[in-house]
Length: 218
Image 1 (cartoon, rainbow, N blue to C red):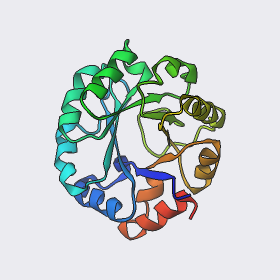
Image 2: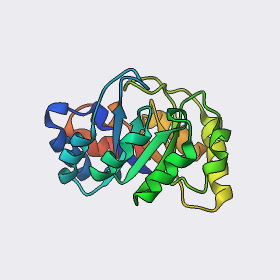
Image 3: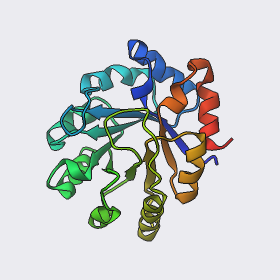
């Protein structure tokens, strides 16, 4: 399972000590740092802006996997790249011109991700597969942590087939209700990056490494 990447979502961390939390999950074996950016418009919650991303950038050298749950998304891309993002993921539903959005992200020299809400068909990204470096399948409705897993295993498997058909190295990420039990199913369906909030951050920093290993199936 060593090829499985774990991307703890800092949405579930202790915000009063955010830099320390990022350093702790880095030390515990996180592969990516997943940063859920919510605007209170596209999703019913407000979280982090680019200044927070910039502030925690010095706490780790790990990949910043920034998930923009905002609309319109295009005006905010540059500020999050400048803040230190390594991957910028935009939603299919967050703007009228997904192809242009992905071009913009790639032009800034970072990896481009695309996210699909639970109801959004995988076919909606068929014609941008040449631009994406990451596909994020939402297995909850975006906007809040701690929700129950929606078993969209057929959708994950379809995305894996689309990726394999390109011959490109594209991450397949799953976000929503991921825990050691559901992780087994999403890995079997083809995912290689698991986003987990509660499943990592529960029980405090001394348990982060154990929880990350459990998600990998170790």
